[in-house]
Figure 1 (cartoon, rainbow, N blue to C red):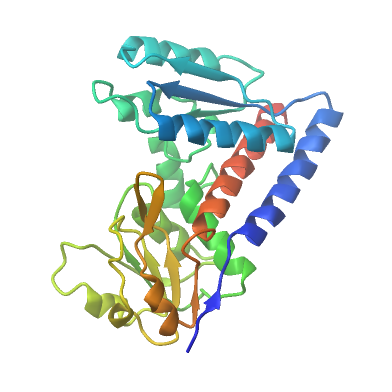
Figure 2 (cartoon, helix red, strand yellow):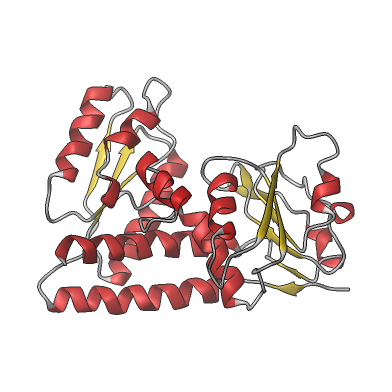
Amino acid sequence: MTARMLPGRPVAERVLADVTARADALRAEGVVPSLATVLVGDDDASAGYIRIKQKQAAELGIDSPHTHLPADTTQDQLVSVIRGYNADPAVHGLLIQYPIPGHLDYDAALAELDPDMDVDGMHPMNMGRLAVGLPGPLPCTPAGIEELLAFHEIPVSGREVVILGRGATLGRPLAMLLAQKRPTANAAVTVVHTGVPDWARYTRRAEILIAAAGVPGIIQPEHVKPGATVIGGGVRYSGKKLLPDVDESCEQVAGAITPRVGGVGPTTVAMLFRNVIAAAEKATA
């Protein structure tokens, strides 16, 4: 068996085409959608991610003001920048690039964001909205995974989904998202982590297995139910090399699988800009 590939690029293209149309409609009304970004320090990878987001914003017709703070920035200085963007009516979305230097408190900085401008969907209020099913910005990678499954017509409703990984940015919010009563969700979701003895007994029963552990190669063919759908959500980097949770040999067991490169990544970026345009529409309604 060779698995059917589930690329993220066509999913992202469809989402971004919708974002472009909505941005055009806003500009026709005299509103320029805007995503502000804040980078603290001189981490090369983080700076690269900011450039990618700025380039994508330009292609979509979205303004992208940016503040680059030095590595020795104080918490009060960071908070001052965040509050300045919160108060700027021309800014609709705000992103603090993670990680930030270790002497700073990221969670405290995140809590300073206006929740409606939180395009990462990670503000405590937005996680609470997700938990109780209220509308609000969704965490980008979980939302992208739901969109990817729907785009490729992978049935989710009523099926057994197992998520390996319980992190705040992926595993936990994805579990809440896929358990909600909606045609593209409504699953029986189990969240398991690597500290559980014999975690593979859970993954081997999954009709849809989502790796979100951030442990390179942790999912091997013997951990996958034959014919299952396998989504690689967790990754780590060694230098510039991407190391996914799902070993490529799983293609021989799975029925459908995301590629090593170009799977969940493009959909995550697309969901970020979907959140930006939704924030702009809400602010100008």
